[in-house]
Length: 112
Image (cartoon, rainbow, N blue to C red; front, top):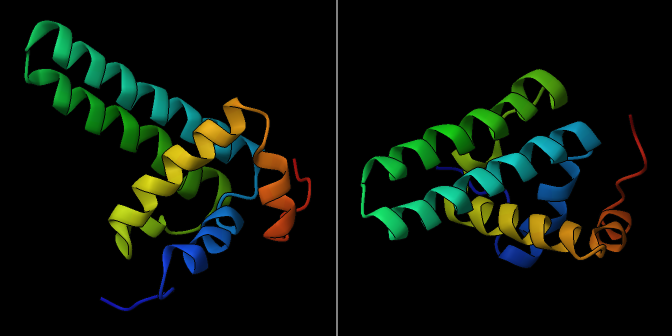
């Protein structure tokens, strides 16, 4: 597996640039909510099928953002753990209104 970054700090701006289109990021937010909802339902019901729902639902949203909107390959293929961490970091930064400064620092400009 080839490396695109040597640390998560190096990976983070690469990740943000791979999610430069707002619609792609919005689809990733849907993926994050899907994953969190599936996890909550797993704990609430004990039904292991929620794991499958969480994985399929999350990846469907996220990969649609890459293959149909950004027209790039998901970074999860090279760095699965860092991508998962970055997905939720982006989600929580967005939810708290602090994502903009990270996008700007990574060189991501406003796009439609």
